[in-house]
Structure formats: C-alpha cells, structure tokens
Image (cartoon, rainbow, N blue to C red; front, side, top):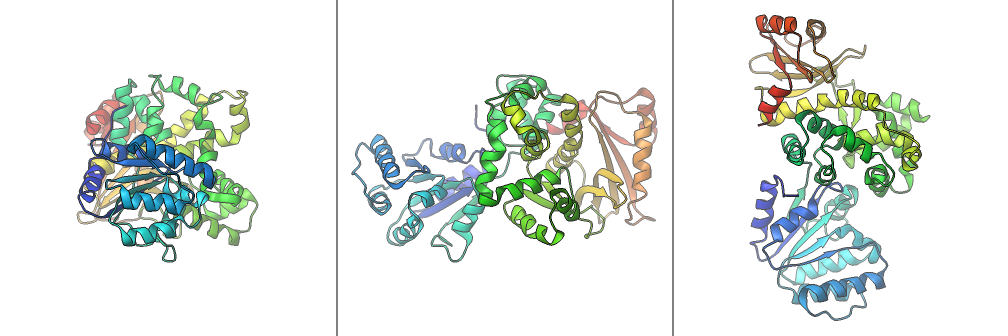
Length: 445
C-alpha cells in the first residue's frame, strides 16, 4: 500500500539526519506506522537497521551478527551487547536504525547505560522507535535514566488524520459511508486500514475481522498487557467499565472497588494515553467523564472483550444491530474531528455537552470573540431525519448556559440517510445547516 500523508514527520527526520550527530526517537502505539515512516525516510539512504527482538542474550547477539553480515558483508561475533554496540558506533558511519529499542531491556538491562557512554564518545546518527508509550517515556524522559536528555529529536507519532484515513479506505474501494464506519472502529491506524484490503463493504470486513484467527481479536490483549504488566486485569476491568464515558464513581461501582483506589489507575491510563478525561464544553469542570482515547480499543472493549472466547472459537457471530449502535456514538467523534481538521467553522473551542441530569448534545462549537455558538446533532441510521430531531436539538440548546441574552445560535444536523422533504423546507426557511453524505464528501475533499 502506498505511503500516506506523513510529510511533516518526513521533513523533520530528514533535516535531523543532515547533522553530524543526532539521536531521533519516534514513539507511538503499535501499528501506527513508525517503522514504515523511518523506512520511507531511509529508502534512498545507505543505512543499517536492526529490529530489537525480545530474546535472551546469546540468540539476540547471534541475530545481530546475522543482520550485520547481510547488510554490511562482514560481522565479527559478539559475546556481549557492549561489544555489539561498540562495533556499531566505531565502524558504521551511516544512519543506524533500532526498531523497538525498548526491547534491549530484555536482552541486557545495562544496554542503555552502554549506549549513553558510546554517545558521549562517538558521533553517530541514530534513529530509534518504540511502541510501548510508558516504557519509552521512562527511558527517555525520566531524569534518573541513562538516556534522559540524550535524544536530539523526539516525535510522538499520532494516528493519521480523519480525511486521510477515509481516503485510504476509499482508495481500496469502500464507499464513503463504509469508509466513515471503518474510521469509527479503526481510527487512523495505518496497519489496521491496510488490513481492510480484500473487502469493499463494511459488513464483509466486520465478518472477517471477527472470525477466528483474525489479528483484531487478540490485538487488545497483545497491546495492552505489554503496557500494564502484572496488574493488567484491573486496568482491563476499568476500561471495560468506561464504555463511551463514565464517572469515577460509576467505574468503581462496576468493578467492585472503593472510589479511593480508582484515581491512581486512571492517572496511569491517562499517562499512557489510553484514556482521556473530558468535561462538558461550557459545563462544570467537576462533571468529569473518562473515555477510551483510541477508536479501536473503544470498539474492542465494547464488542470483542465481552465475547472474547466466543469470537476466538467461532461461537459468536457479529451483531450488526449492536455495531450500528456503536457507530451512532462514534460518528459524533468523527464529526468533531472533521470540523476541527477542515476548520469548517470559525470556533475557539469545540467538544460535546452533557448535564448531570442526562441531557446530551453531540457537538458544540463556540466563538468567544463573536459570541457565536453551534449546536450539532448526528443521526447515523438508515432512515431520513424529520423536523422532530431539529426541534429536540433546539430545546436542548436552551439548557446550555453561555451568554444567553446576546449569543448568536447556529444549528447543524448531520444525517447518513438525508432528510425528509418537509424537514428540508423548514431548515431552509430557518437557515439551519444540514449535512448528508454528499456534503461530508465535499468537506473532506
């Protein structure tokens, strides 16, 4: 699959490599495209690269010798990690790429101290990647670690933009509605998007995704246990309780824990960027909800984790009604991201709004300077929207306390299946914004 939309990152890495001495560190969640990004930068540059395996010392050193022989035509034998790194720093005068550098800790716990010493003595051009955010932050940003402050450039690789992710699946052959739905469950993770190849309809992909042997079934376990370590079961229980948004007291109740024990786990999950804390836009800062930060993990905990063994053994079939309910919630996230990315409105802040009584508005955007406020409702269903949806949004808007006497209100209705004729006429007369798939297609372009 062709390389998509990492222009800024390519430029940053390429410029860093012009220096005589550099240590570029790239981290981000698994499958985000770190290795592909580095290979794109280095594809026309003479370099050496090593995937760092999770092996014991002797087989790891044998593997390094073999890889060096393949790339350089010669390699001595190595008895220690010190010998291997010393040889590289002394003799290889080209970029050196360590893929998954955090795995050195399983080969030799002193590897990072060795690397620190060699960085002081030699000019080198190093690029290192790592998938486990917690470990990478500890190695490179904790003051007591030997490689603290040694990187000359640190990049946190984020998911692809919404429009890029949608374009990728459309290039594969999915229509716009299916591409949006794929984003809702996969987000902007390049490797996941690549794995949609072979199908061109959302339902066909879901069937394959939830079949025995699919990497998606095991993915949550494989990625998250590495981050959480021995206490993974507690973290999993918390994530399972979070769903589309939960308060700390609700989380504690779901897992049968005391409210005083929950904050530490939530702080860990925030630090690892698995969850994020949300407040209602224009609402009370004390009205806190936690949401899973990643589309795929949101889907995994909602759909796969509760039926994990059944999907593994093919005893469970996808419930498309349940998945459609999930999509209805996630499309809110899609619309907010599209508005932010494409700057459709001139806003100073954007988010969702909810009250303690249970009233919710999918998206709210405000312009503080001009006292303008936009209220948005999203309907992702296979029937046209009628005027009652507009009326309901108007009523909920009156619950939002923000410059009530002077604000200028605007309303936006988003519908997968369009609008009834009478609704269109009334929206036109009252100048209410409305988007269907055709409008979303034009905005993305």
